[in-house]
Length: 511
Image 1 (cartoon, rainbow, N blue to C red):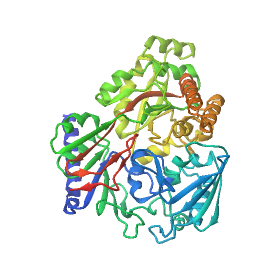
Image 2: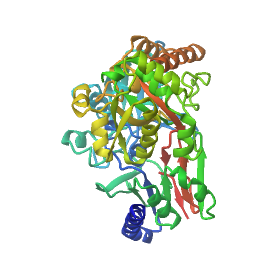
Image 3: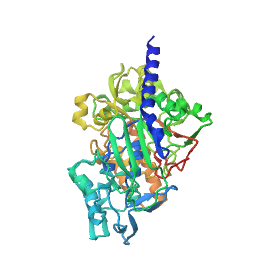
Image 4: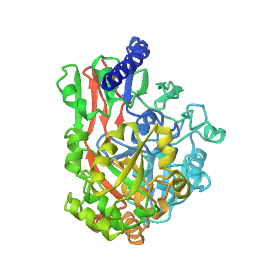
């Protein structure tokens, strides 16, 4: 009876959602996209979530941009040069560009954008990417800015194309409205952000460049996989991202749908709070890894659309070490480690998860119970989870949060932006995404040295060492690398999927 009621509720939810979205279909040039979570902020520099980045991409631009092939191309900067030291850069800005609120884009705007990230008092989620290597940004004239770096960073131009490098209107930032009211220079501008329901974007008539995309882009979301599947199959939405793995086979066989699949850059893992009593012991953390049957997890949760994770970097990263295999499934080894650490009978721990990841946590709950670990799964709405996950050490202790189930992808942005935010001591939450407060000097040194090493072979060796060091100290339980999956109706073209799952729809065509 309970399962029938649950099924009925899902169908009712789907029906209500589809009915509410029916009016969208009257716009022939409106593209409707459903994702599995809502955006976390309208400020690109105050969020680090892949699917938030997808929503914001049509509205914002940086000095540089990643082309469809992953190479850096000019955006709000026309050109750039550096001196022989690689520490001093000069950018020539694009003229006659305005933010959506009419504020001019110029050197002053660039300086203000980067100063807000260099200001440690702001506490913006993406600032860690900037502060680690940028010393200062100055205006030379209205259309020229100079950057002074603390150290050489081969990924500098790539970082400028990522979240904290995207330009927001200084006027909107000062007014404190940017978290709820997007204000960039992109080809689309925000019309309405109805929290909990949708984001509506409309073509920017004053855009400096060309855009072949639809007149409007509407973003909706649901954490219920069956709702996403039904919405696409019925034609109420044009695109769903990511595709719930349990429905991938069905969508693949639908003649009206194109399923797009590629190797993923997202690493799914359980971040362990190294300040919790039991989890402060590396043997306990290692035991949880040995007690995790990754193959069974991938089969049960991902229906084969994922691969077991062996490293903090994903296989699509050029510095990925495929030879790492520190934690084969071994219950006896896990029990021995717990006994040596003084937890022969196991211990209780609590994990914070979002709705889409609840099933994964429940499977882990069953696996870890075999070594006496009693996992309390705390399922949270996205906004509540974000606050819990990015809480500082004192708050996490008060909450009793021992672990967080999360995923992270640097996509095309490089190894440093995968490892530094998650494992460097300077990246402790809430200022960064080191959610478990892992701190190891050797790891920090390897990440720092690799980031400023220009020689590809030497840099790769340093990243191999960093992966090995992190794996051995087990600040997390690695789970899997999820394949990137999105699906679109057959009449949709011009969508580009970047490694990590972010789709670019600003030039999508709806026929």
